[in-house]
Length: 80
Image 1: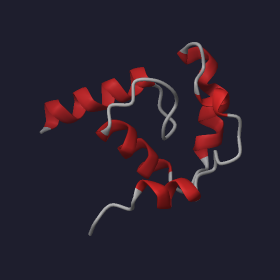
Image 2: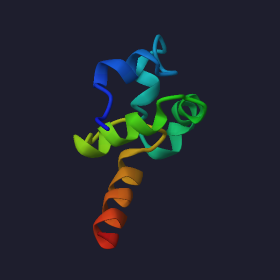
Image 3: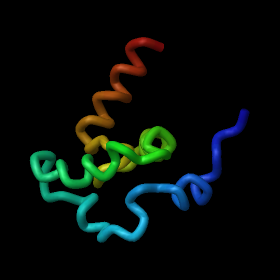
Image 4: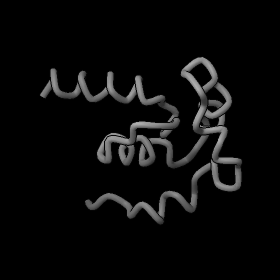
């Protein structure tokens, strides 16, 4: 099974049409609004996997901040 293209999952994202600034908070404490949007998103995991694969350094992707994504990557490396 192949991963969906970026364009296909982005078209179904809950964040479509929302001001992008919401997803680029100044710090992790201000990320709650973006995370709330991600919570019920039907493509949350595809978004998160995109951010992990492309090492997105800024913003909230798939309901995770950059710090949280670094933690996920470290955990994956340890269990590999």
